[in-house]
Image 1 (tube, rainbow, N blue to C red):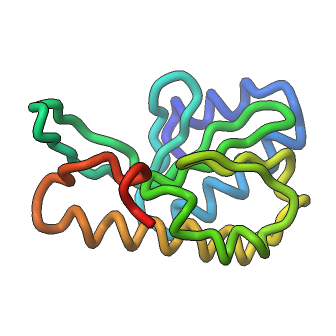
Image 2 (spheres, rainbow, N blue to C red; image 1 turned 30 degrees about the vertical axis):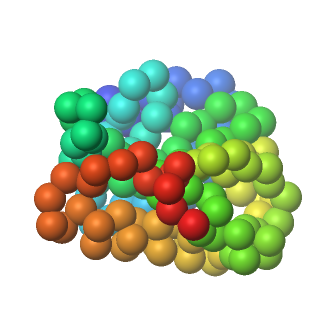
Length: 143
């Protein structure tokens, strides 16, 4: 695990959050084949895609990732949660928004279901970004 990510995980003051973070890192690294990278303040991401909107705004975004906080881990689905409503219904105890799945502890959810969701999201974004920059905010347009 790259040093900034390891140092960040080690700095978390809740043992359960550290344990859950390590499990998510292992899962997302296996899915993406990429090392974790620290994004912004505390977001751990895997692999990137490039976007360029009609407005001229462009940049790079993480394909899959999460943000660990005590009692609330945010898993990011950059192509939106709406695409995964069937699987999310089987996930277990969670809440969500446009592109976020909020989980208190990994023990509250079915990990094989979460892994399926993250795997599908990763594959979908990778396939969309193969032909060049993605031209829209995915979670607002993907159903």
